[in-house]
Image (cartoon, rainbow, N blue to C red):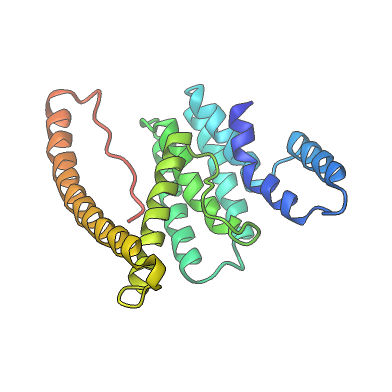
Length: 221
């Protein structure tokens, strides 16, 4: 049940925005009926089934539904352009690689498939949802981490725009927040470099001595 609810979150939010504002009760009923009876896009149905099969260790079946989901997603994303199109193409490319690995009965974590699907679907969802704080099929803790990072970057960028011209009544607090944000930004970049190096060294160690724990992973970069 929880998986289904997370999967249809974007479409539910869209309906809440578009539903009749004069009748809140009717709006609530429409949203409830929609979420119970259908998923937003044809691709979603296949992706949900692919994840279900992967959870059951049925890799071949998961690969079949993943392929069908990709075909549907490519049709749904025909009108997407710009950065959304670039990101969508990258995510689809990774999903195709996952599909190949599943056909060859290679290990693919369910969590990884969920995240890659999320990265693909969010580029379609922007057409009918005005927030980027929700990620389809994403793990709750990952969605929270992304939302926090997104807010941090956005707020710091806006404070930088006001640097040197802050309102007098907001100047003291604003400058303090700006300085703190810049320090956190530098610390985060330094942490990313250290974490990247650590991931490489620890991955090599696991691959050599504990191959059962080693996972190459899929990247969108």
